[in-house]
Image 1 (spheres, helix red, strand yellow):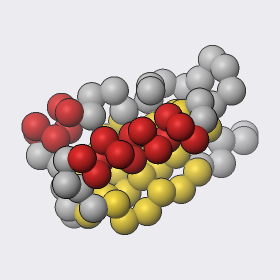
Image 2: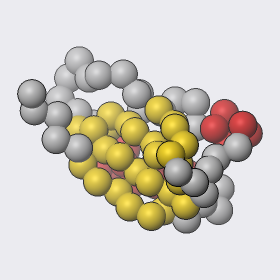
Image 3: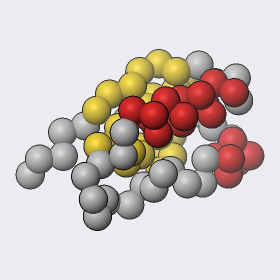
Image 4: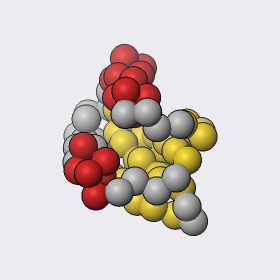
Amino acid sequence: MTSNPPTTHRDRYRIVVRWEFGELLTAAFSDVEVETVEGMTVITVWVRDAQELFGLIDRIRDHGVEIESVSREDTAG
């Protein structure tokens, strides 16, 4: 996974989780873009396929974090 723009076909997803990540949890997700907004944490990631997306979702759940929403972002310019 990478938070950088893709060089091959990938889709960009925005995952919103309840509460703000602290330093340790942010470090656990250093391979994706993590930001806190109004008491929530927003994870933005480029994925190649559904398997990669669901792998990240599983990682988030493994840390006991509640997912508020998952949405595909329109990257067409």
